[in-house]
Image 1 (cartoon, rainbow, N blue to C red):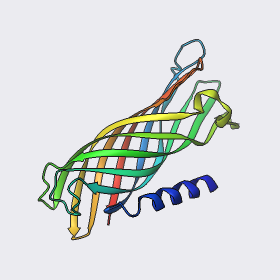
Image 2 (image 1 turned 60 degrees about the horizontal axis):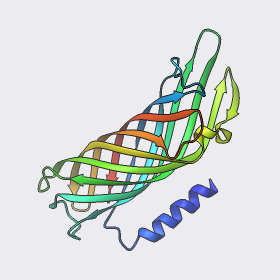
Image 3 (image 1 turned 180 degrees about the vertical axis):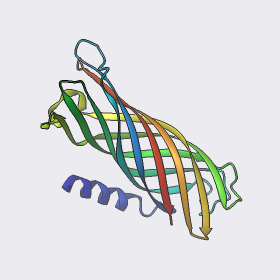
Image 4 (image 1 turned 45 degrees about the vertical axis):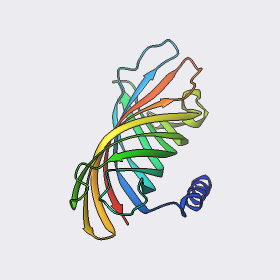
Length: 206
């Protein structure tokens, strides 16, 4: 947790003077592990797992105006994601529970910038690394931080859409969807791992 606190504090101090609108998002990840073993074969028993996500960041409008009447804006944020999966057969049952910490940048386009209810498509990219991870096989746990396929930096291009409602002058809420393909950067090991992730998001802006 010490690494998480330091990461968040540095991020906030660096961006505080530039931010125009802070936001917090949380919701659910529905993740599918795309895994190839050392022989290049997939694991057909892997199934999608659910996990939480948390995001804290700021929005910046290109015309330097804190309002919703401008079409293009972007966000920068700190993100904590659970990417989980289950699997097994009649003999063995196992789960993968992982938590990734990273940063994310997203570009937005407002379809109805002068309405209280706005529809906002978005595209972005994120960078993250494994914070903690555990694999349990028939109740016996293994630390995934020591596995090569989980080490290093993961890149996550994304796209999605937000429905944002402004009910006070300086406060808004949103519900949204995002699809991510999380890929390991510079993977030289024989085993390959990536994630396909569907994310349901609930946001508060102030």
